Image (cartoon, rainbow, N blue to C red):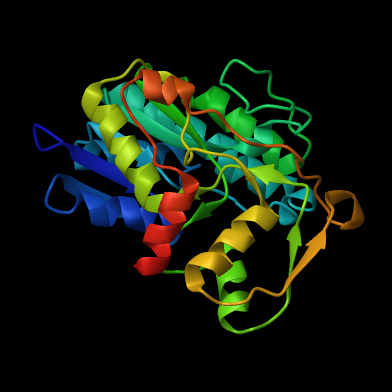
Length: 281
């Protein structure tokens, strides 16, 4: 990145936030705020911090990500995923900063038969999905904004993702239940971070972008590839979405298309390549 930007990163203690902060080290002046250090829904506090930092780029990685928990805690999800985004976007507008926010495939209903584009109508099925869609709308209060929809993030040292659970079970020789009919496009955190900074550096047109690794797969296919890469037998138990009782409905087909991102000059590696790099790491 050029001109040594002054970057404010919120949600800096999470999987994506910690990776963004680490990548920016030496490239920018970074002010990183974990959840306990900044209430992003406190508009006055947000503006004070952003002004003190002199931020010209704000990257929001803070989110309420407990999909099932949001069904019983809708106010908490709305506070983090919508009202906090509104406070950040308005503060970014006031100080003249570019605003980056991350959203999710859960804004879609999963009834498609091909990867979703940014032009497809959003029809979230859950409180979590609705809170994230509101956050997308509120992010646009910043005139210079990017909303990046990511999906099935993996690759953090915290090893909390669905892919990490699959890998852990394979390495431990344990059986693991995986969806055989839920189609996704996983997102390697390192690649998402690279794409984010590339998009900002290129000064690509503002708006909503899908930012996932290329290619689509069921969770069963991802687990099979993980077993192949690990050179270990995988005890995979296939299950169907309809047979699993979850508090929040999941979109069954939620693959995202990267075509708009590619048109902006940002290419994403395949999910197979990303998974191989992660497991070698």
